[in-house]
Image 1 (tube, rainbow, N blue to C red):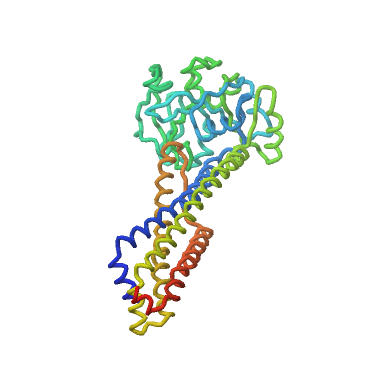
Image 2: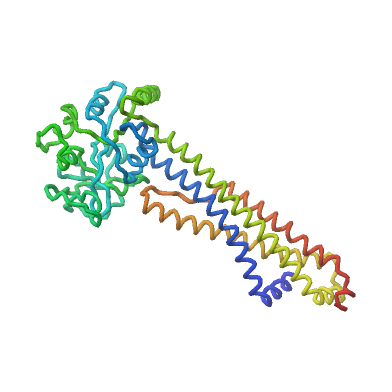
Length: 398
């Protein structure tokens, strides 16, 4: 029987291929949506793991997280420098690191911060050393610059009126280990250097020593768009969040903001899955129609098989097996296509957003495949039943 099916498929290979591709593309759509949505959730959650609490000026909480955690370009209002000073002296705070941005080098964002944040993102540097002077920089794992490279910061976009800060050139002295977040594409420099470059530094002590970098916050820091805070306990985190929500500042848990974004993402996923389901139903109906037409065109062949002694059961099994094989091949190929499409989309998003998006199959995906294969088996019953009920005499006459 299987040799007969193989010969039949070989004879009608073009039509069989068309059916397989039709099913594969419909399946790939739903698989890609599911995998991509899951990858985005996992990738963004992992990227935000290092950030317990973010404090900024009174503005959009979502934009604050997107700018400070995912380094999405946006103009954020500045907080008074006293906020940073107050947090640095708060006994509930393990450390508070400012985040200053606005400049870039070859489209890599230059972020002003402290060694505390660098050590949190990368407890052990992949190479080199920590920055200790105003003109030194530690780069992310994906930044394509070599050690000792001199990097002149560009403010804004070169093609849209941006300008270089030629008064300083940062020297690459260290590289972080991969974090899986947008900070892998960032260039980290002392926040004092960013203040000095933009004429914002309140303390005009130009001592470049490491001691000066570590203690300068105690002398009245300039304004910053965001501050990453590491509370000592969970209770401290909630108290700080409540205390800094108002009076010109806002405090957010990045995970909380991401949960709200996931809610909107879930709605979009539902719409896309509805579209994918509708597509699959239409294709299933089309396949049933095509299968019935195919059985009608092969009435003589089925009648000849019956006349040669093939039982109704064998004819039923033959037709059902052929349809099930075609639909099953399309479903399996669709899962492969969906995975490949999701991987490709993840690479594109990773390049633009900076955070890694892990694409992988889980047990629930296997369950979905099994359900689809069972559905394909059920669809194959209709043409098989039609062939089963067909009379050999009437088939040969037709």
